[in-house]
Image (spheres, rainbow, N blue to C red):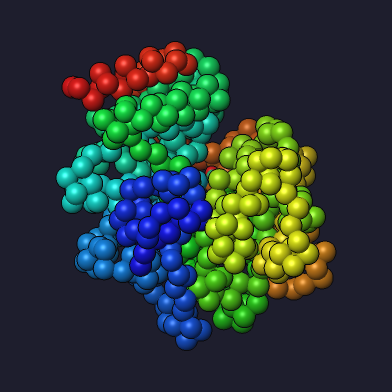
Length: 466
Ligand SMILES: *Cc1c(COP(=O)(O)O)cnc(C)c1O
């Protein structure tokens, strides 16, 4: 399989090259040249497979012979052996909904599903190509800890994560700083998240430094992350009762549009998902677009579901490319219109095409709290605030569409990761799994650093020299 850019500015490249490139060199996003598809009988066969075999069957279509099958299977098995549930991504019946728990990985958020695999994949490709990679990223919480856990102890990789000192949740901070492997560097920045992000941007803009020190990123635009996320949609299908498989809808708490884009891919590949429901919090640009056809930027507002506090979703360009019938010129026209006027209005034709696949519901903080409480009172199940947006969206969607399709809500974080919001909703914090409780007593390591590009650069140079 070859990979191309949404902006049409690169010659087709291999899967390996696409993984190492991350963002396409023309500024676009990488996509497979064609979307592989499965017939309905093939999908029934896939539904019989355990998770690692299912991942193998799906990845093979995207990777072709770039990685020998025995090596690929080994990478997949290592990646999901770190999950504490044997189904990896179990589907639970909660009231009249299905909840797919994507949070059984090392950091209790769904990003582990992709980043456990990406860490192993990076290591494999780097060792094979005798190269090294120094990952630098700024985080406000979930991505940094999942990335650190994805690459800890791996050969030929170092990771430097900048987080705002005193401004990430205690659990998230401990999940990062308690990782003592030699290749992990936690930098507590004297400043806020934007300061860290500005430093990282400036480091990447220094092209000599970037090249000489093999800098790389692990943000949500890496194709391998999307690919890894496609698998759990197929797994959800296989865990549904057979009668429900004909007619089901998936609800996805959305930030950067990575998770839901993987669902759209799964649908294109033949999985009979009726529709994808995009749940947002008060940061509602995608909600407004899907409901009105007008895409216009709003301000980022902090909410109880911080991992969804995003306006410009970095993966959305991937979907816009397909919406524009894979025409890079047309896509670039749209992007230019948006850049020039801050606003994009799509034709009724494209709007119909989009709403055929997607619906969207917006959920405010107060409703997040009442949803956590209602579900807990009715079923005893405790939702995290991100998953709660999805559950509320599922109920709204059912009501608005008067439909009785089976609803699958993706649970993107364990409630114990967000104890304050849960306590606000139900009066007590959720019971934490032992690994979260144990964090408090683990030794930790981090270095304080000024929110200054030169200081971070000097730090990286010094650490890589030793
Ligand atoms: C990252 C994240 C999301 C958003 O996922 P996207 O792929 O960025 O849309 C939702 N919930 C949690 C808990 C997350 O960590």
